[in-house]
Length: 332
Image (tube, rainbow, N blue to C red; front, side):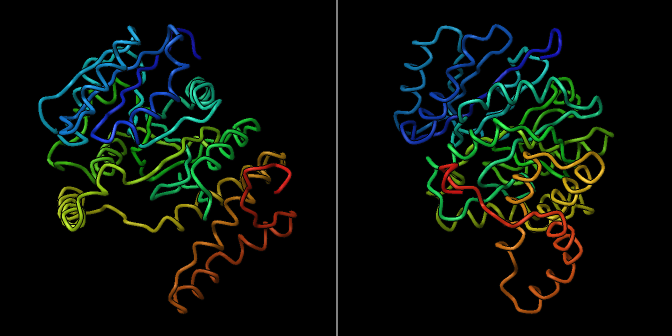
């Protein structure tokens, strides 16, 4: 890490400790011995026994700071409380439905040590996200996704890909910039689109955000809201409308478009500096996603193929074939 750089992890827990927060914390255990990191655990007013289990886990790990909240403040409110007591130069917001594969902590610290100066927010890649951070693994169990991610991090690409917005399942943010922007907007209630709002506000002050291609965090996805039923869609519609009101210029784009942009950036770097094995592997993965995530409508699919024909031609010219990675290197 850069001299003096410190990192605070803020883990937000809400119910279902044994299925989410517990496994997440288990994968973060290695950072507890690093004197330049700290872990802040926030229980967001869980109505089951999760707060008790969080307290017990924190008691077994004296370096952990535990903050039980009396009621659910939503994703924004809970994270604001956690970051409010953080001391690191960077804060890493961690949703409880994430898992850090072996090597992820070191990869994150290495990325923060080499990130360009204007970058104030960094998002890892993952198996499940709604933007260019997504490296899909169709029909692959989460355990195998963890293995694939761990293997990918052992051959770094050295890529930081510019991002329009960042998905907050796991995100590292400069703490000074977090406070400059006043943290997350609690007007989004329980959650959805507060990360989009923060991303746009960060862009408005001239700071950059990137995807760290060499940091893979496994993501269960939607674990917090899966039990809401129809109320989940109502919340999403309400918050999407709120985002539109606050940011009329907001650009809503399909994940396939964000993946295309990331892949074009990768190809540009490879053509300028030369193809490495790591870049080829990642290009194969994103190329496979480009073909797999096509539109269902025949017209939209035809238009997508027309728009990406030059990219596909370039990839094939350089010997890049679309291929999703397998859990076993030998079965690739």
